[in-house]
Image 1 (cartoon, rainbow, N blue to C red):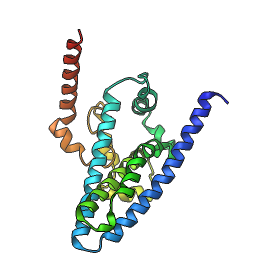
Image 2: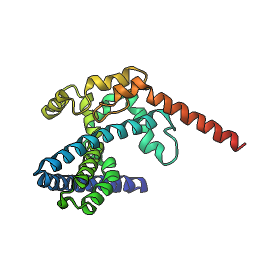
Image 3: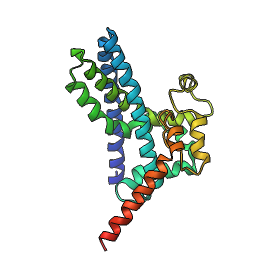
Image 4: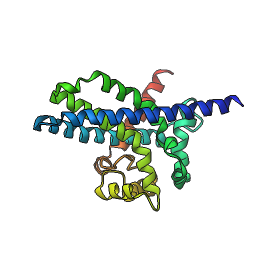
Length: 229
């Protein structure tokens, strides 16, 4: 077996283990939060954390998508093949991701999110019932779960016949819909980057946030280049 094949198998095994362990932590975390939602202050804190975390997941998906689309190259060392290339290839063949398996879709993100979720699970004293602690716990749980599930939601937005659960969630607007995501693919790939729910796309596009950030980064890069001459 070649070294690259061994690396591929090791990576797949890592992603599979991370996905399973992440799911176990997420379920246990959810159960612990649910056990503390027995009074109004606690329930409100948990609800606020879940919504806030989900918004953070949408924002982070947009940031990652924006960087993947607008910066670096597929040949950039380290991040090029594994991070930049999938975004660029998706523009050329958007339907390919429909064929990807669950672990292939979420495994990489699960590897990155697992340490944060596990640390929060073990370090936050959720049993104290303190509203701020519950708020923090719910926010982290929602952000991490939303982030890990983003590519799954993204795949649903490209499927002609998504599962019934997907159609139900799309109808409720709690995951990215084909209509919201189509804006990105029809506008030159320079807008509507958020792909968890797409809730933030309209306000961020309307305010020109991505274009403003890109101008700022290019100016900063130009100034840095001038200083090194």
